[in-house]
Image 1 (tube, rainbow, N blue to C red):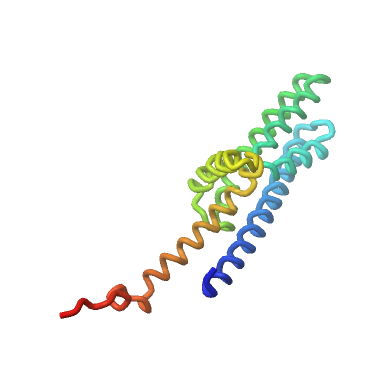
Image 2 (tube, one colour):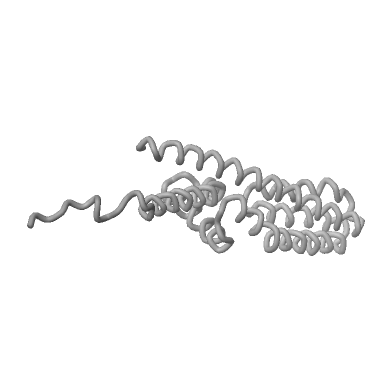
Length: 176
């Protein structure tokens, strides 16, 4: 890479990936805390364990849904009503975190609008699957890679728009 781009690329990659994964941990803690509160109010047996398990499974995209179903099925074997309560409560808290908190938090961390976050995930999964890297890895890397691409594209656009570089100066003048 040219010298002027090298530092920008390395700092962008480091900042974006660090911020994204730190944001994911913060979201897991928020989800665990919310579920812990709701499970305690509902007097779900082993609520602390289940809240932490479901919360930290969000570090892997789409894994929390499977964990919620698994945990509610375990409780449902002993008491179907408790299993359904846990299922409904976990889905409700998860939706609040996913629809209200996550887009704002992750958008501010990685610098992408929420709509771009929703586009980046399936595109990243599909592209990684086509490249033989696995869809799970594509899901994990989709948002930080999209953020890096946006940051570098913005920097390239600002370079082109800067007053230091004028198109008329960079083109040779025709002979008169």
